[in-house]
Each structure stands twice: as structure tokens, then as C-alpha cells.
Image (cartoon, rainbow, N blue to C red; front, top):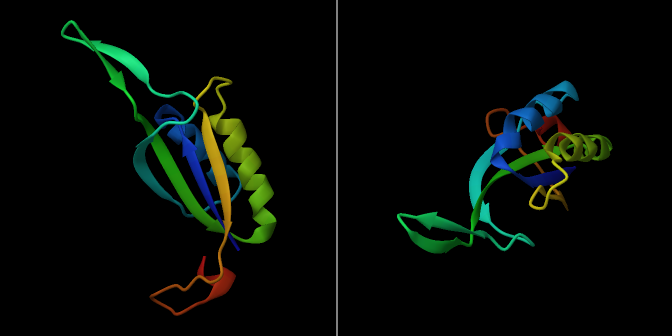
Length: 112
């Protein structure tokens, strides 16, 4: 099993969710996060004063999948979240040792 964490632009969330549903992803967690990479934030003007916005709003999607679904899901997220502009985000894949469904005590892939 693998955990996929994807950091994407907020306005791409619905498009990514719909694309993941089409390839059979049935569960995910979504968080609003802030951060920056190569973008390094940007400058804004508020009431005549210029200030730096160092941390930009992003969406973090997390899901645990069977190994055989990982490449398909990565490609699905990449296509749906892509704008061809800096700041599109990142996808991280992390191994998962065990998963347990609390209600039924199912373990491993049966739990996801």
C-alpha cells in the first residue's frame, strides 16, 4: 500500500476530485494548507501599502491505495491539476505498513 499526498492549487480541487472518482478512488482526506516552493510568494497592495505574501493557499489531498493503483492515480492527479504554470504543486508517494479499519478491525488493503 502507498499513501499519496498531493499539494495542488485550490481552484483545481473539484476537477481533481472528479477525475479521481472516474478512476475508482473512493476515499480521500482534503486539507487547506499554506506554503511555497519556487514561487516564493508574491507581493500585494492593500490600502496603498505593499506587502509580501510568503505563504500561498494550497489544497493537500491524501489517500491510501493498493500498489497497483498508484501510477494511474498519480497520472490522473497530474493531468487534472496541471495549468502549465509555476505553483501547480507536487505529488508525494510514501509506503504504508499497515491500515486498520476501526469499526470492523479489517486490516491491510481490505481496510482501505
